[in-house]
Amino acid sequence: MKTPAVDTEKVPVVVAEEHIFVPFILNGSGIDYHTNDNIKFLKNSFAVVQPVSDSVSIGIENLKTFLIANPKQKVTITGYATSDEKNTTTFENLGLARANDIKKYFISKGLSGDQFNTKGEVIDKWKTDLDTLLGPAEYKFEALEVTPTSTDEWVILKEKINGDPLVLHFNTNKSSDKLTDVEKQKVADLVKYMEHVKDALILAVGHSDNVGNRDANVVLGQKRADFSKKYLSKNGIDGSRITTESKGPDEPVGENTTAEGKANNRRTVITIK
Image (cartoon, rainbow, N blue to C red; front, side, top):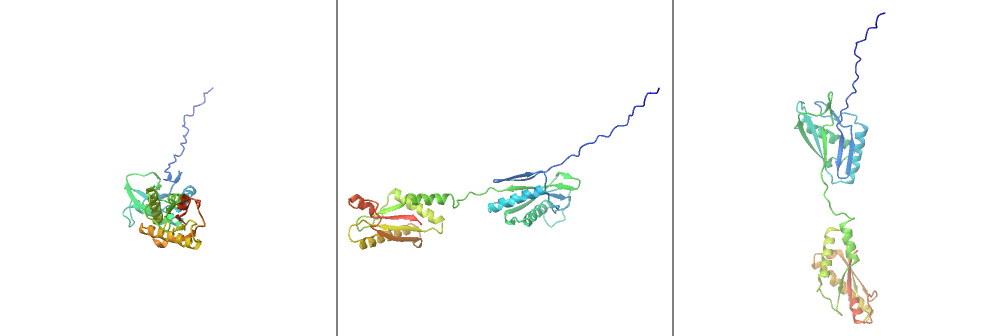
């Protein structure tokens, strides 16, 4: 009986195809998006290969939302090309041409071109898949300058001014511009606020004690308010932005039966409207 011949033919080994990834990355203060797919370019070409994948498109939409919310944000697109590629464009190099085509594509998706700068670099190598370069671009987000907004510094300052307003006190039938250090600081706060909040107005309300005729006291309260307006004008606040009025003896803060109470009532209260 013959022994069966041994089949010595080698069985081919199936090798899994290697996937090459160059991730599409948008990483800045307030945005962090990564996907393994990317914008692609054919070798020697400056044009973005269409269609762009869904995952990259989602990233672009995220970038659009981010830039609309941060209109002062700038992004620099750096495009890359390899040294063996031919540049047939009018740009300085093929990398710059690619960066500008990415910018053009972003604009076509509703992003503002004013928020992008472009650069181009030629390097020796880039990851490719046959004749396709995978994502030869990077995106750098400039640091945003922190500036006061209507919800922070100036709101806080207004609350400080109105919460503990500047009150100028007067002797009987007289006014004085001798301010304490605390009062001078309150004037400085008013000047600072008015310089930065251009549509703000100041209200100066004059008051009196109840000694004498009411009508005369209303007039006296108005004089005190007008004096305060002149004082603030001399310290750098436009007089046209200061409104004055008088309450006369109608809103006392102290007892008019005492000298101290009467002194407290002879005043002008200055606030931001």
